Image (cartoon, rainbow, N blue to C red; front, side, top):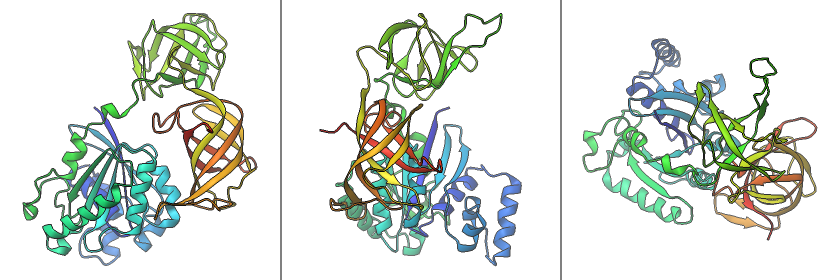
Length: 418
């Protein structure tokens, strides 16, 4: 079955955790002991009914404050599709958590409280979803029960958000009115909003087309591990293991290995259960080559006439995640890109981006916690990359502090310096 990864986002107390709890509950994806634990916790808190938000707010601090702090991942499945949900926090100070949770998502659900309308954090998360190149965006107008399921109120919010969305790069935008608390339009269509002719949220999640979102044109295979069993039975076996980052590979294809540039052909492709006839993203496979070439971790296998950009200088958007310090020009870090490590220096800070107004502060001298900006980087060795808008796998990287080994930033490659 096809897997859909989606993230929930939005302002504080817009009902993200309740929505996920409702999805899990109504789709019968909760174990009895989980439901019993949530019912007991709700009773201890003096609540009249079961607080489904507690299914995802797992930290004690989250349950005490009634907010989401960390990213909570949940899995469920229907007969049509498998799902991995990332419940991301709504507070401004946890922007880095939202970026982490949404970085691999195929779809983002941005919740809006029908009473409050489009808030600053709603715009912030919609922009971050656009920046992360999430192909599909759903605006779920929640708590419709608190505005008497008013169609005019829903239309007003849709019109306001559409005006803001014209500034974003969003390919697919869908609006759905819901009540997560009562289950209206979450799993099944609501009789109380018969004026809405669209699908329920779950039906949309099951049917949204994601197969064409992946890059099946640019063949990219970062080598993660060289397999040499060193046994009598497999003494001639040499394979290169990793996860396909783009395109399609088949036995017999002409390929080239970077950085050496030597060409060869694919002899065979092995999957977890045996040989496969083709490999495509995001499959994890072992590729065997016809010729014995010097290939090691961090190298990339691609097509001779369709190669990634190769260079040491990058232009990138960076989200700073460290509380310990700020990003400043001339700072040095370890850079991890696909399976390749290098040291890198920040050559320029072009501007800091205000994600609320989209204003560029070109006078900024540093990036602090949760801030986003455009930077120039120079690596100590060549990297094999594509622009992030073309390939999210080969267009992203992380920066790691050399002293503490903590991940301090996530980056999206825009290209090479002009």
